[in-house]
Image 1 (cartoon, rainbow, N blue to C red):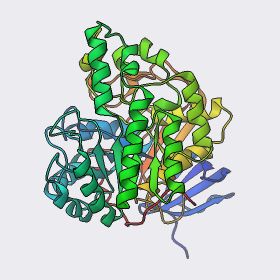
Image 2: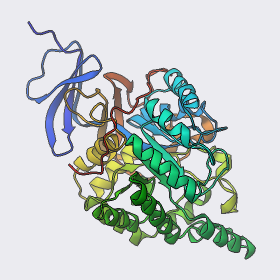
Image 3: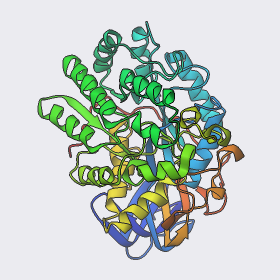
Image 4: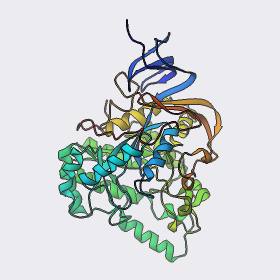
Length: 460
């Protein structure tokens, strides 16, 4: 006699290529053991979400849990992730007070993740401003999923600009690992000059954030990093393109044999310069919001298959760092983990697009680019039983529901009409969120090492 499954989840299943109406996911242990439709198989526990939408738990490929508080920020950010249906966070290495630049620091962060996280976490590694090349192989061996470097300097220790000779050497070494290297893509010389000129003229109002970081600052950096990628054989990835031309440039380099890709953040698919003016510091991020016309071009790029995946660039700065009339004095970064699923779901519904795009671009492809698939990112037999349950309806996103410390309970999406809410989240078969309360304790999440060294560029 076949033993019953541990639990079965019932609802409308969103797969990358189709929706299974009134289907089920059967779970044994921490993994998906069966997917089907019709009569439910025997199980010790049944969660009936009939009429609700079941997606793979989201894999957010870009967040900064530790830029404000350091590693204590992991607990709060991943609590917010659990409430938002994000079951795997891919966390950036630019932490306070030091970046993750060698295997020893990496191991320390892994220990903190395993002790405090509410969801599973994969980790980026990076290098020091000078002399960090020799640590690259050790970071890859320690389980780093990808590397992150920057063409723009925010802090010489925590978030440095890597000069061209060092970048060439780093890309050569990273190419040997097979891992992707993502770049913060802004031209420092151009941005610094434009910013100085704006301040000198007394223009410190919100729109000047966009004017001093024009699209050209991104595309100049894109060309630079992809050329170095062509020279070295590294898989080079734009960490966030706010303009469609970034994806066109990546595609042109792929056509020449380059390993060149780029991701879009959710805000660049819906936020505009008018939102920056309205939100002031609470709408400041780098790169900045663009025009409404550019948002439409971003959707064209996404639907043409040019975008690697969609992320949030979640950076939970405390509220006081976002206040003030001088836009240049405000911290750059948005909260996004808890709003990711409801806003992306709503954008697709509003545009008449299939929800399969959400499963594809916010789960499966993200996991593939970071070497976490098929363990993460899919509703399929053998994968971790990570499930996001969405309840359709007419709701308003309220920043008061954000599950994080009080200072970061703000959102650029506050007051936005949404077409669904996160009704439940399951991580490896265990329920983390019931629509109102985070059920998981710190330490429920685990560090997820990269599963393999294969390079994925979005094909197949």
